Image (cartoon, rainbow, N blue to C red):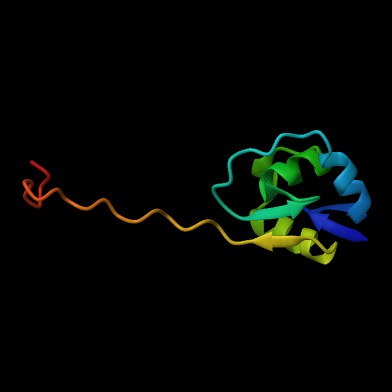
Length: 95
C-alpha cells in the first residue's frame, strides 16, 4: 500500500513492516504505540526503522495513520501516573 510519510511516498506491506521490526528491541513507550507481532513499539521507532528517516522528519500522527491503514493496532499514549499524595506530616509545600 502506498503511504506518504514526511512528504515521501512509500510502498509498504504489513508483512514487510513485521519483518523489518523482527529482532528490534522495543523502546520504552511514552507516546502513541503500535502492536507488531505481539510486541508494543513506539510508532516513532517503527517509523524510523521502516522509512530510514530521522524521527524529526515525520509526526506520530503520520505513522499512526499509515500503520492503521496497514492493519496494525495503534494505542494512545499511556496515562500519566497518579499524583503523589502529600504525607500527613507535610504541608502543601512539601516541607
